[in-house]
Image (cartoon, rainbow, N blue to C red; front, side, top):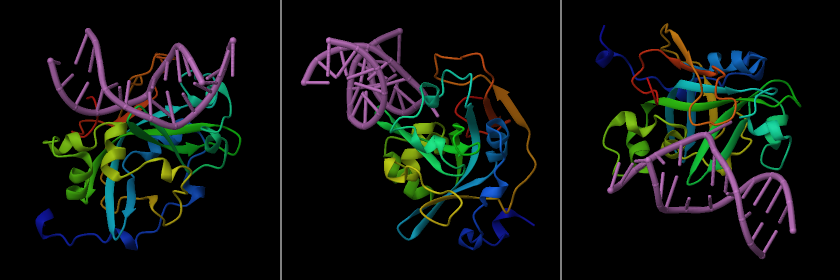
Length: 207
DNA sequence: CTTACGATTCCC
DNA sequence: GGAATCGTAAGG
């Protein structure tokens, strides 16, 4: 059996992961998200990508977390129910998070890198001609958002519903090792080891 | 209104 | 190593 002979998977037949399946703690949710598939419906096309790198932003004691300063218009969705998308803009780029923890507890999981599975030509087009190598399409939080067409229009999207953005289990999931490190690009709480990624995966932002 | 500031990316 | 670049949040 080779992969070339395998039938292509129809990801539209797979139900979104329900809210009950989301772990209650932010760190558990971060590890749980690894290997899951992110579905982005763009017009008639489904873009599919596998989550390979995440960071946890904790509801307490985490000065790097946006929610640390309290609830504002921007961070409102972090204080709501889990399983929604928290999206924010950083300079020219957007970053996507999965809201974790119960209502009023503002933890979240930043998606830092994904592995393109389906719709690669569209991702290439959205990223731009200057991007040559496939792993450079999605190996960073701003890059993957650009490749998947994710912006503030998807703020608060319910990832447990079959809409424009949701999460499913990988039907071809294989076992993997989880590696851990400090988070990237932050100045506050720099020593917390809250970055998790699939070991030896070529699509992570930094090995 | 004005200012400071990034959970980034890309180029030099 | 450094600039680009823009919404957010806080202060006057």
